[in-house]
Image (cartoon, rainbow, N blue to C red; front, top):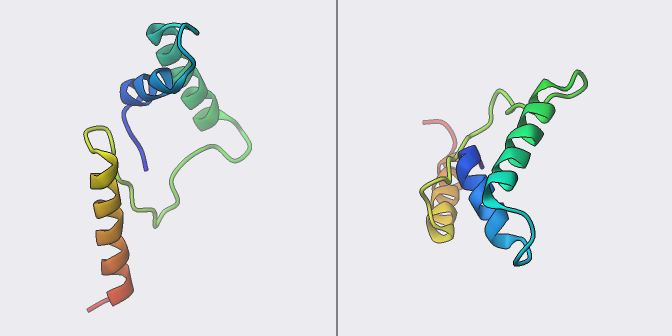
Length: 80
């Protein structure tokens, strides 16, 4: 699962205790963490070659579940 850095920052900010930090600070923190995780020399964060990426930026939780179920169903049926 993935989402835009802006959306992940907004989600994290909404989940933080009220009055702690700012939206801008949270967005910057998410971007720093992403850069650090993707550029680290040992085990950089990147999708597996056979990964199925689902962008959740504009999806509700229910829509994400439906998308996951769809991929699971396709995978369970196997190749034609």
